[in-house]
Amino acid sequence: MHEMAIAQSLLEIIEGEMASWPSSRLKEVKLRIGVLSGVVPEALEFAFQVASQGTVAEGALLRIERVPFRVRCESCKRTFEEDLPFMVCPRCGGEVEILSGRELEIESMEIEDGSQGRKEDP
Amino acid sequence: MEVKVVKRILEANEVIAQENARLFAEHGVYVLNLMGSPGTGKTSLLERTLGALRGRWRIGVIEGDIATSRDAERIAQHGVPTVQINTGGACHLDGNMVRGALGEMDFDGIDLLIVENVGNLVCPAEFRIGEDDKAMILSVTEGEDKPLKYPLMFQVSSALLLNKIDLLPYVDFDVERFRENALKVNPRLTIMEISCKTGEGIERWIRWLEERAQRKRG
Image (cartoon, rainbow over all chains, first blue to last red; front, side):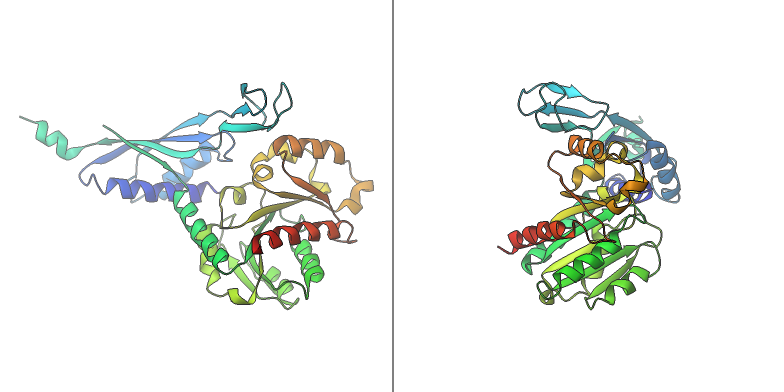
């Protein structure tokens, strides 16, 4: 259950970013989480809900994109999407490099920009 | 409107881990992050290691536990500087917790720092603390399928210690299949079979550890 620690790190990043948008409301946060990262999305959503109470992120939704485990063989150069986290090429047995699957990233935030909204009003 | 951010969520921890690593390098201290499930034998391995390296290396220990200082007391009996970190519920050590403990450690008095992480097969793998190597320990009672179920820890480790091999006659644990699984997940793992109870295989582990530490000191 390290999802709480991850939720708190996420919250620190969000609070830093939201400081540039003081009159805006955070609606949604997009995350990219690799299947190998060891994070359970539901647990992270729950931890974020709890950790964000009373902060600028309270009520914001997490939209989590699960990134598949993809590798490229260093010998035969083929790429594979794998269900099991093997670091060995299923074709030639060569060693593979990870292309994706370890991500634990924030990608973007969806905000309602209060000040901009007012400016556009006639 | 959408605001692009694109940041690694654990970036803050990475930065602190790098600062820790710089501090270790300045003092020429090799740091090992020892991970594994509760009850797998982390503290027993540590005791064996301290016994074997006594007089040859000056060792410091950081003990990570959710609560209590039982392990630190056990280790301090071996006459090495020991700092206890209580995570207060967190299931892993992170860079910041280790940094907090460093103030209590005299770096000029040690060459090798072993950090015993909180007993857990998932979470510690995700948080770097500034270590040179991660080593994990798993016992034969835990089952040979663990590399497939908990791949990340096997992937980030340099050494894998299979402990309690003295129990092999009594459990259904296929060592060959376990090795295969572990090496599929991380072909670069150095796998060592040990028994902290009988001392079998400990010599090889000590050789591995000394080689790694020696390499850092140059």
